Image (cartoon, rainbow, N blue to C red):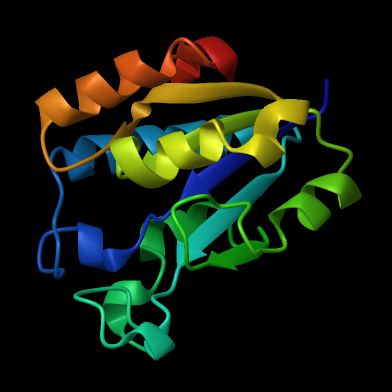
Length: 171
């Protein structure tokens, strides 16, 4: 199986000093850096997914185009500087994006999903209708959200549809 590591919304607004800091971000950032390092060592492509708010819908509370908060975290960019960036405006990373086209070019059959907002963008991408043709695994130690309880509830909810494994068991 050809794998790809999807790194969803590792953007500055979700970190301390940003407009919507999440729980446990430093640990998750370190875990994702290690996951990217292992993916790079195994020749597994990394794909950055970046949420940019739709300005036609009015000013969003965060992820506004052209802001530092919407930028991908510099440590994540440094870990995978040549990875393609797929820009999205919906929770589902497949919805009206180039993700499927990017995966097809790489002949990907298995998705390793990680990132921010476990209960939103991570789960919506993992159980997207478009993701059904892939084997999907959510890297449970490489995701976070507003607090630990919501993170755990979201992982439990998605566990009936996709694999959940710590990154060290997959990469």
